[in-house]
Image (cartoon, rainbow, N blue to C red):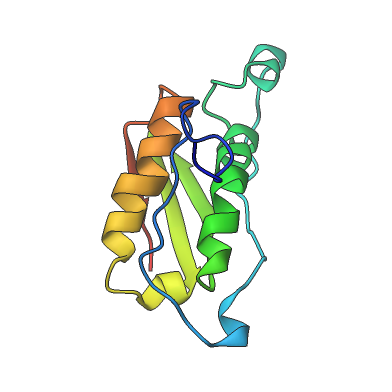
Length: 121
């Protein structure tokens, strides 16, 4: 059995793809685009809302932060989630794999309305 929490229970783990020794590479600032939500959406953890996307990203952040990176929501554009990779993740050669195989995959599993996650520079 793995030491990673959630493995074997449907949780996606972002693999360790890059490392950095830069202490300033880890930013925890997150800018959100406030959107109006109905009471039904606010109570449904699978609805496409900024709050639910943040909740899913919060599950992934420890893995990103371990490599000196982070992720922030830039915008929800219909079913497309636009994010900005920060710190070491922003300049990592493996950032596309992290974005598609880690972040997008987990968001699509958790929030079925999400069709794509794109990186905004």
